[in-house]
Image (cartoon, rainbow, N blue to C red; front, side, top):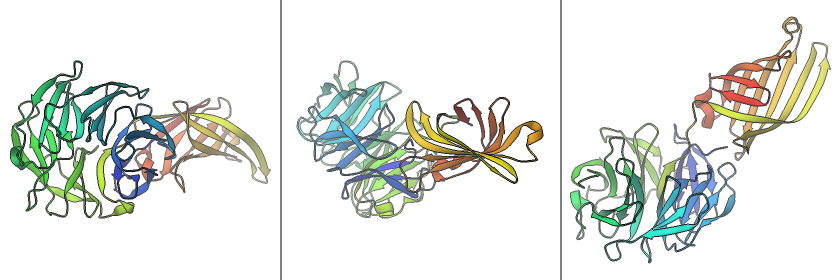
Amino acid sequence: MITRGLLVASQFDHTVREYDRTTGAFVRVAASALGDPLGVVIGLDGNLLVSDGQTNQVKRYDSGTGAFIDVFASTNLAGPTGMTIHQGVLYVTNSNPPQGVQKFDATTGVNTGNFVPSLAYPSPRDVKVNPANNRLYVLYYNAATVETFDLTTMASFGLLMPAGSPIGSGGLYTPSAMAFGPDGNLYISGGTFGGNLGVRRYNPTTGAFIDFFANTGSDLYSPIGITFGPDNNLYVATSAFANVMRFNYPTGTFMDFFVPNGGGGLTAPFHLTFGVGPSSVLTYTLHRDCLHDAHDPGMHWQIEGGKVLENGKHVANYSSVKRVSCGTTEQNTAQLWVTLFFLGGKPPENITLHGAHDFHSGGEIGSVSAASSAFSAQIGKQFKRVANTLTIG
C-alpha cells in the first residue's frame, strides 16, 4: 500500500499519523518508535522519510506496513526539522549547530554539501525549492525571515525580507513552516498572541508582505506545519490542542478542523504533508500462488489467489472467484469477483472488482464495485486484466 493520506508528525507519542486525504478520518500509525518526529516527506522510493530531532537522523519507514527500514541519512545532522526533495536531492534543515541546510543524495542518503546561513544562529526550521526560479528558500525561526540560495553553487542571494527584531515583515514572529501556494506566492506560519497567529503571504521574488492570509483565531491554536492539499486548500497543524485546520484557497476563510483536537491520537503536531494521491490509472502485476476448482450441483467454481505487485513491490494480496453456471456456459465465460487486500492495515484497505472472465482468452473486464476509504475514488472505474497485468481506471 502506498501512503495516500495526510501525514502529520506527532511529537509527544513519537509517531507519524496518517489521515484520510478526503475526510480527515484517522487511518493508521504510519511510523513509530521515533525520538522527536519533526519533518515528513515521501522519498523517491515511495517510502516515508522522517527527521528525528532527538537522534539527529532521517529515518526511513515502509509506506505499506509502517515498519522501520533504516537510518537513511545522518551525516552532519543536528536538530533536523523541515525537509524537501527536489530533482533527486534531499534538503534537511539543521536547527542546531552546524545550523543551515544539509544536502543529501535522495537515493543513497549520502551527504553532498551544506548551505550556510549569513546570520548567526538563525535556527532554520523549514526548507523549500521555488519551482519558478529554482532557488532554495530557508526559513529562520529566530530571525523571522527567509534566506534564498543558488542550488548549484550554494551561494546566498541574501535575505528575502529584513530580519525581525523581534517581529518581522507583516507581523511575522517565530515562524515554523512555509509553502508555495497555487498562486506561486510564499506562505509562512507564525505570528504573535492576541489574534495575530496564522499564515502570512509574501511575494516570493521581492519578499513584500501581501496579506494575513489565514488567522487561526485563537492563541491556543499556534500554527506550526502548513501544506496545500490536493484540493488546493491550506492545511495548518496547530499546537496545544493538536489539530489540523483547513482554510479555503483562494479566500483564506476558515473551513473546518480537518483533524479535530487530538484526532486519532495526535499530539504536538509539527510538519505535515500529503502522500501520493490515487493515480488516474492503477497498474498491478498479479503473482498467482494457488488455483483450485470446486464442483457443486450448480456447476463449478474456480478459486485463485496470490500476491499483488506494484512496480515490483509486494503491496497487497488478492482473491479471485469465478462462478460457472448454466447462464455462462454458452459464451464460455464466468461471473467474476476479485478483492485486493492491501498490506499494512487491520482490517486491510481494499478494492473489490466485479465483471466477467473469458475462458477463450483468459481476459477479464468489469468495474470497481466497492472499496475502503483509501481507494474510494476508484469506485465505478473500469478494470481490465490481460495475463498477469491488472489495470484499474
